[in-house]
Image (cartoon, rainbow, N blue to C red; front, side, top):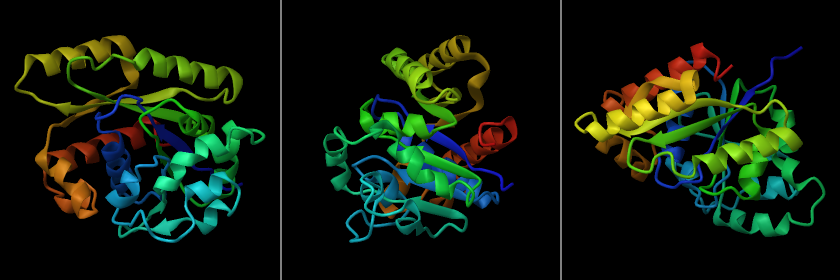
Length: 259
């Protein structure tokens, strides 16, 4: 029997936590390490699509068409410039999907069913969610084996996380019994501040072993990379941000979060 891809959903309804950057960087790092990775852009802002160098305005099938059942997911997958990394792209059209899916049977399971035929082609599927807990994120959680939650090392870092955990618990109870928060990654860490160290300590005390040892530092290179249609892994492989994401990806791969 062919091994099936592990589906990892990157979620945090709080914006500005490095969610899309984390999805792209971890996907690229694991692809460079020899994994076959599919990045699913489930955010109407399409930042994961443009962040791997693809136009969000191309007249090709997208995840929107896949969710509505117009095309199979395999027909919408595009290769990126990183060997081993493919993307299921998004456009602003996806913003209407939540309304259009309201009356659709099993609307919470559209993504899970669409990805099923692809799970033998990849080692890992990484789903980038919008910064909300609407139907798109519920679809991502229903399709997932694990959830990666990026948490920024700033004031109010834990604010709203309770709501995400409750949503995960509801999806687990009603739609996806295997779902778990498998990984928490501390982002935007500024070693010069006492606040960052305090937030990191609070998160580790609260969530325990699912928090990666690696932290992602604040990095200009990480912020610049998307504007060049690249992950920081290819934009500046020697930067502190790229090295940290490489370490985080390796920790996930060896610790089970990407297995």
